[in-house]
Image (cartoon, rainbow, N blue to C red; front, side, top):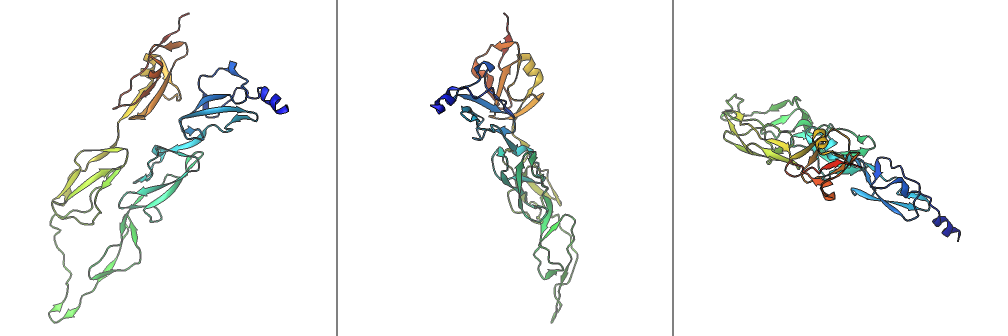
Length: 310
């Protein structure tokens, strides 16, 4: 009976959700009954424990559940990895999630590895790692290196020595200088992309090398470059796929605002959903479903609101 009486009470007052808000709920609904549920959303860079875009806040005999409705996340786009990229394909990562990043071919981490780990923390990613240009230890013919290093940073110097033998016909493998004959060095690196083949230190004339872009980027320009007269032709660029820009001017014209963000401009990727709501003192003109629109081919169809006239 005592338990029944507790459930009859209304223990849940209007919730203040840190980093989130209730969806279409008025203070007149509260205090709420036990087992009553309310839809809620989280601010940008926060998600419910379920990792969905929204969830239910439930009134229990002990209070609101979940106790912490909105959890911090980190975006893959906020991980600025110089000459590297996140190897996982997720868009967002929950708090304390550890994920791997990889360096582009020809680059290594500060400790000489091709990959490393970063962690999503309360204030963002644990570190903004850098991948530095490197060279593997070369394979010599009739020579040996004078140090034991296995990889070398940009501008590092490696000394080596050759051996020649006095034979019946004189000295073998005499040292000589020769014209490179129009050969090229390694292909030029590009942001957010790399070559499809293993890099070499020297390429013969007329050699063709192909580029590819990392995930979420598209190639602009010629995919292939050619080695001519000791120089490479112009490499392509890897650009971010189409995005939609929503400006304050466009929203003002339609008397709308973003439901979950107050920035003057928001960039959304193709197929991302964008939610709007009417400004205070305005009501919907277009149907309810138009207030949740999708970015397609760099364009957004805006809903419309009109003034409320008593």
